[in-house]
Amino acid sequence: MAAPEIYSPGLEGVIAGETAISTVTGGLRYRGYPVTQLAEKCCFEEVAHLLLHGDLPNSAQLREFRHRLWAYAQLPSQVNTFLHEAPRKAASMDVLRTAVSMLALHDPDTGDNSRAANLRKAERLLAQIPLALATAYRAGKGQPIVRPAADLGFAANLLYMVRGTPPDDFERKAFDVSLILYAEHEFNASTFTARVVCSTESDLHSSVVAAIGALKGPLHGGANEKVMDVLFAAGGPETAEAWLRAAMERKQKVMGFGHRVYKTGDVRARVLKEYARQATARAGMQKWEETAEIIERILAAEKNLFPNLDWPAGRLYHAMGLEIALYTPFFVAARVSGWSAHVIEQLENNRIIRPRARYTGPDERMVPDPA
Ligand code: ACO
Image (tube, rainbow, N blue to C red):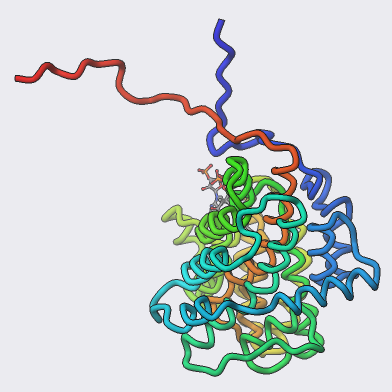
């Protein structure tokens, strides 16, 4: 007798593998630590170390980790040239995806799938991606490239390289928290993509390139670039309710809301909302927080829909004066730590990921004989 067919559209609720990296069951935790505590007490480098190496670093390990990232923060001249010459109209995620693919051509460990080589490649990408996204951004505007500063941490340097001035303490912390919250999230679409790719015994760069492609879509990481479009379309607190009701009538999705797993709210959104609120107050942009509040209230009450992380992230970045085209690349800069951890984990206990499909095509039919 054939085994009963199990089918869940979008793989909803399907356990597609095992992981020790994070869980969303009982509250989001990275390797056991609640993400709320990591956001409050740690910096992004500590969290990246936790994801890649299995534990939070002690002070010597953190120093060495930062030292390695500093040493790896170099781009091959061919990648640098590409970033300067990429078409101005190209999507920032396409440029970044191509740059990561090019980095594979120059990495001495590309074809080596050992754990040690994958950790080296992951750390190199962690250091190179901020440089690549900032170079593409500034070169695209005809601005001089800003080298990272030795006395700034990961989050502050990323902001510094993009804007050309170091952030103040509030901005550094707010941005750092956003990176920590973006770093890892179990079997989301891009992480699953990375695992599928490396399950064929392909390499880490290929997995990350594919994951960037998956992240780009507006139903996943691309949503953080759509949040301000929603708020601009809503127009402000006076018009938000009318706009939302018309959007609901049209069955339009409100980007930054809803989640496959979180049906009563996303803890990451609650953490980052406070930073978005403070940032908009500092920038004199309370109008967008008030607009966001109205949309949140109505969607919760009438559609049982709650914000995901992208909803406050888009507002935070906008209030910090960051251009929208940078938002999903920032997500990449953080999530490459989680993707890489998953690639390493998948390869340590690998079985090719190859599900089945339910066939919905025509019944068997015969090719006609030639006339
Ligand atoms: N706006 C309006 N309605 C929504 C939204 C939304 N943002 N999200 C879900 N719904 C509705 C759906 O239309 C559906 O209604 P129906 O039952 O009447 O057809 C119901 O809620 C269930 O939604 P699904 O689409 O089935 O949920 P699914 O789990 O498949 O999708 C997803 C989850 C993709 C996140 C979805 O909520 C969505 O498209 N949200 C907007 C995009 C977004 O913000 N993505 C970011 C995800 S988080 C992240 O990447 C950090």
